[in-house]
Length: 402
Ligand code: GLY
Image 1 (cartoon, rainbow, N blue to C red):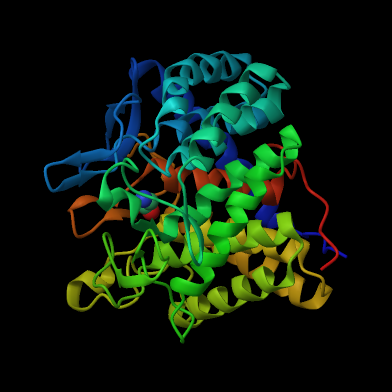
Image 2: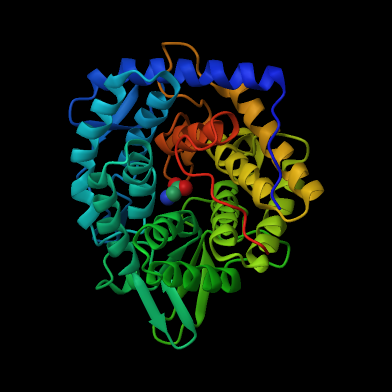
């Protein structure tokens, strides 16, 4: 049983207009980028850009995520094609995909999931061109190869080369939202080992990351031999014990995907528990602060990217939920978040590039704070497509029998 999403006439009108204006902005930006890719907007509203080739890694003690955002631009081009059917978007998507494809062999980061599930995977869905699928499968191999097998379970190491002990023991909640690449690879290739790797990771994350109150740690350090959890900590949150709102969003998103792909009701229940926590901490707002435990002036800094991630996840949670009433309530909650983003946070104006104002990439690193971010823009467009053009960027998969 799955529930059908019903949009009001005003939501339909709003989403349709935002999708069209977003396509216009993407078309305006594309010829200005050269071989680089948008990252986050600067205080003057213009994009900062980074080449696709920059990989994640350590320089001494300093960690850099590298360019994990490049695939999202391809995704925006594909969404713009779906809204407008302007053939330039498909040409641009293919050119950009060529520049991103080199990262399919990058062994250094879990973000390979983000890069390719937003580019090559929808590229294959939209065009049917096997070239896209082959790139995405190469990337899925690299993600699966990040599996660290311990005496008490297996996890996908998040940050850095597996030959580096810091990389090998690291696990971040963000990885949950990289699992869709593996689930897609399993479905597309018929090789269930991708799904086994994803589920092993989901199980270990469910055990090690969730606090008693339903909030999540940003990162966990494991003993890579025994699998023992050494500590929980943060990289982008306000503190090791705080509730970083986007991390909560990545967890909700990943467990909804895991529920749909595995048909296991425990993932669905966990996604609901995580979402209950998120909604309770929203306290009536539609957009969370960047960290639910931020204090003072910092508590006023929002993260619209977190809201975009959660809105799309809740729309999907509602669609696959076995109980129509509960499912309908989750979908409506996701839609209300999306409506607020489209109405209050979408940057219609030309001076502000990017789509969603007021995302927060990393407050502790003073990077992309009060900015548009490529991941916020992608998850916003994905949620808009889920709501207004189901099937546009990914197949509408049947709800499992939980
Ligand atoms: N690394 C993913 C994030 O910034 O949320």
